[in-house]
Length: 280
Image 1 (cartoon, rainbow, N blue to C red):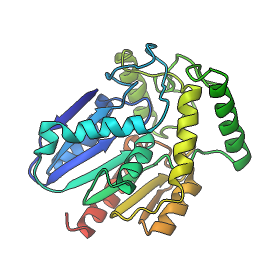
Image 2: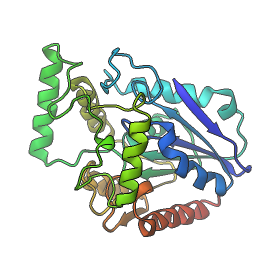
Image 3: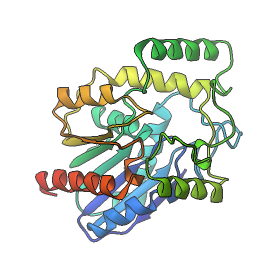
Image 4: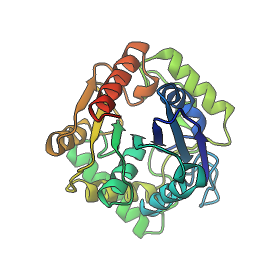
């Protein structure tokens, strides 16, 4: 597994948990913002993506049999000497799939933090109930038929992030979309294609298992008004039930950290305010 640590100014350490397909280089700007605020930053490439090992032997297939595998990745990051020895409080910043992984670690007691920031967390997918049910049944059936490592419908070797499509579900900022596409092409060896049926089944199972569990750690959530990847309803529901401050950014899409400058400024203002409320 590949990890990265950026030293900080003694305020604490940010555990930066990325989403599916992502790699550390994408978060250079986020890490710089955290470092400017005095935090060290520790992040990783989840198994099967970035520069970490690809367990299925195919460089573009995003596959995992069970999301518990990602908990082992997170445990390895936490056990790494520079992270384990980092002084000060821990703050988790989790995006998309990282939001599901981070939530699981918190509710199971595998991870203790002074604050958690969930940005467009994958607590559900942006699907209606009928579509979600059909998707889960399809994934379960495909895995039962021995197709766990086959691409799910609509997926393939191509990386969505490298194509800069329009309309773009990731960001409404054309410059940031072009930057992400160029970065992904420049790091083609770290890019990832579509998910497999196995990943899809594991994701549906994990989201369903997490839904009834209460989060008791100090946490906030943020989501874009035009979110089209994960479920806004699931985020709103957990925020209301568990008492999470929720920032909804009008016009924002899935990647709030690479949104337009005004939207990014609002996101960081919300994060700064939340950390101040936690006296961090």
